[in-house]
Length: 55
Image (cartoon, rainbow, N blue to C red; front, side):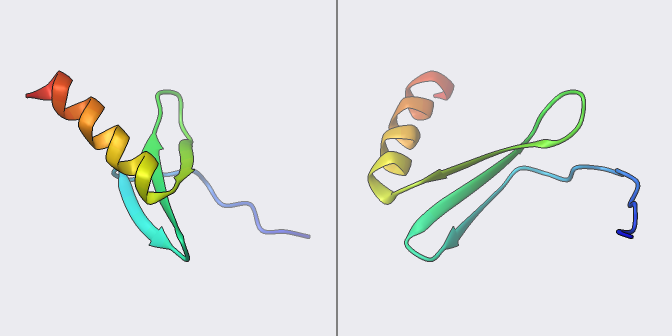
């Protein structure tokens, strides 16, 4: 039987390079994480889009 682990904090947003891809984990309201895998071109496009909104 698998051990049941209580969900404590989902932790901060994190981005890691895994193999050829880039994996972004974003905590969401209500618990859990949104996990998005992208390549370098998509990550650059995301950076450009966010920079235009944030500043």
